[in-house]
Each structure stands twice: as structure tokens, then as C-alpha cells.
Amino acid sequence: MPTHEREITEPVDLCLPGGRLNPEAVGWTRRPLHRANLRGWGRAKRWEYWGVVTPSHVIALVASSLDYAGVHGVYVLDRATGAEVSHDAVVPLARGAAFPERSGRGTARVEGGGVRIVIEQTAGGTSLRAHAPRVTAELQVPLPDGHESLGVVIP
Image (cartoon, rainbow, N blue to C red):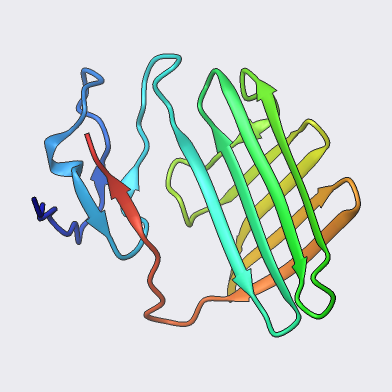
């Protein structure tokens, strides 16, 4: 059974003033337009995921806060040798996690369980920095005008 979610094209608050889901926020975006105005502990489910593929490496970073836990990960594949390094961490109460009110603006930082990830918006794109046992990565990802990313809100 196919579903057809609405494309959101203007900034929108995720929640109504009373804290319930804003029906106008349900749908998908081509760029960050949802403002995460969540209230109350245990309600926030925030994350940033980046996957970068180059001729020599595949790099994946996930930084998240679920309020009750932070779930973070760093993965690197050396395409020439097939060597992989992966480190995941679950951090109680998402200690050490901070996210901007709107994805794609400001800096997201997580640290705990041996993983440190910083995702920072710069004038020309996004800076990705990650450190975990046996791996350190620093990447600059250019984001040209018209670049799209995916944002989704599903009740």
C-alpha cells in the first residue's frame, strides 16, 4: 500500500506550543527545515548521519541523542585493502551530546564511550571530525548551492 507524504518547503516547528506533534511538520524536506522545539525528557530523538564514499575509503558517522541514551558510531573501510575499523558506543542518558535546534545549522557534538564526533557547518560546507579507538578522521564536505539532504518526520 503506497503512501504519499507531503513535501515541506518552508521552515516549520516540530511541535505545537503544548508539546504535541505539529501536523504541519509531518512529511519530508530536501533541506533542513524542521525546528526541534521538543519539550519534556524522553521525547527527543535527534541524530546526524553522514556517509562519505571516496575512491580510497568509505566513512560513516552517526551521532545521536535519544534522551535516555546516546548511540554513536564511527566506521571506516579502506577500499584498497578491505580493512575495516568500526567502533560503536551507547552512552547512558546521552551524556556529552549536544545538537543545534535545526539540523544543518550550528554544531552537533557527541562524546562518550570512546567516540568523539563533531559535525560543524562552515561557510563552504560541513566539517566532519571523528575520533574512536584506532581511527581519527577529518573531512571537509563541500555543499554547493542547491545541495539537497533528506529530512523526515513520520508520526
